[in-house]
Structure formats: C-alpha cells, structure tokens
Image 1: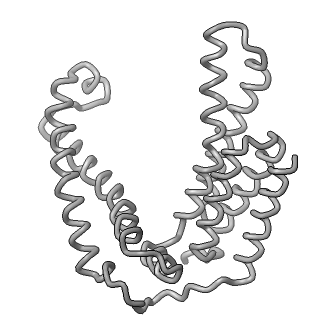
Image 2 (image 1 turned 90 degrees about the vertical axis):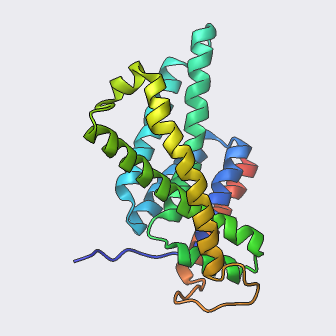
Length: 231
C-alpha cells in the first residue's frame, strides 16, 4: 500500500526556496544555518523525501566538520582552495534541500495551477513548465544513448569514455545536442497545445489552497529570516 505523506501548497514550498536563497545571501550564523538544515530535513521527512534529506544533511555535516577541524586556519594556497570549496558547497546545501522539498511529491500540474492562481504571466509559466519537464526527458535520452552504445560494444564503462574523448563527443555529446533541440521544440509546442498560453483563468483538478500547515511553515520561515537578520 502506498504511503500517505503530508502535502504542502506549492506556494509555501516556493517560499521555502526563497527563504533558503535569502539566508544564503545573508551568510547567517552557522548555528542558525545548522538549525535550518535540520528543519529542512524534517520537512523532507514529512513529504516522503527522508532518504534524500539524510544524504544531503550528511554531506552538509561532513563538510562542516572537515572545515571546522582541519581547515579552520588558512596556511597556504592549498588550504585556501580547499576551504573555499568546502564553504561554497556547504552554503549550497540548504537551497538544494529546499528545492528537493519543493519538487518532492509535487506534480507539474499543481505548480502550474499555483502559478496561475498567483496571476503570473504566461511568459513565466510556459518556460517554467518546459524547463521542469525538459531535464527528466534529457536524462532518459542519455540513458537510451548509453544503452545503445553498450549494445554495440562502445564505451562499456566510464573509463572508456575518458580514454576516448573523441568517441565520447561523437556518440554522446552530438546526439544529446540534437535531442536537446528537438525536445525543447516539442515541449514548447505541447505546452501551448495544452493551453498554458491562455491568459484567462483555467480550471484545474488540483485544489490549491493555503492550509494551517502552510501558514505554520511560512511562520517558521519568517522566524529564520528574522534570526538571520538580527544575529
């Protein structure tokens, strides 16, 4: 039996992404940043993304510990480079977790319905729909290309691709570029055929309403922003 998870309004999920981006720009206190990561892990557990949350939070903890205990002082070019890489990637973990939370168990139709309810223009909705549907199709095309290559005995492993960059360019990059062009055109046409360019308010199977849990989420996010500004 399929597990039932808590659902949030796409607009409150969008607020989570904006909050994570704002805290990234503020360069908040590490303690607040850690609590925010734990809060995002809790949210991911509610919507069914606990495994992804544990992986991302584990990466965050690992980089934080390495930075604090091994590269607390910069003594040369190497330590400066490693410290920069650790800090830069650590700061990106909260936005990545918030984006994962936003996309977990949220259908594209729900996003479109929420964006139409926000009165966003078609020039925003159509590119968003095309981009979000583009990457899954691109990943599937890449898997099909790799499967066809292995069937013909070409690039059976990753090391073969490194040893033969020209073949990699010919058998992977070129087909992917051709597929990218065709996929973008087809997805744009499909979006227009489904009426995403219609400026009038359409109907939707999904009920987009702010519930009590969404207001609680927005309140918690506001608290993190206030603490980030004051501390």
